[in-house]
Amino acid sequence: MEAKDQVNVISLDDVAKINLGNNSWSALMATQKTGNCKKIMIGYSIFTPNTDTPQKIHEEEEVAYIVKGHGSLMIGDQEISYGPGCALSIPAGVPHGVRNFGSEDLEMVFAFSYPEYPPTKDA
Image (cartoon, rainbow, N blue to C red):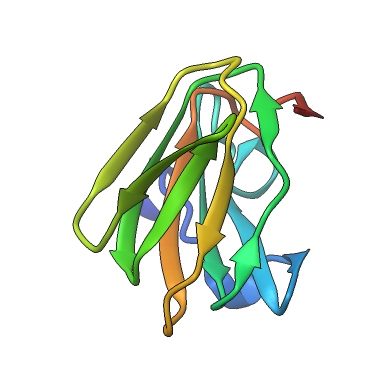
């Protein structure tokens, strides 16, 4: 079997962007559907300045890496700040929302221990 038959390359240009409001968006990059993933998925998000997403609760754990910009996670009424080069680890069942009150876009790579975006509910 050739390497090209074993590896999937998914371009950001080839996946739909999910509107998060305020010109912010997420793209589900490598998933079961797009990359034949069996146990994990990875995505990419841009949160524009003045974005404050509603808190969500995922049934699976999430990790994220901050590529650019500064922001914070709202965990209930607590705020946890982060910036470029930081990794986030969010256990399953923890309500959280993303805030960007900086002056530049917040760029984030995120992954779930699930082959698609996991079952999620509003906090």
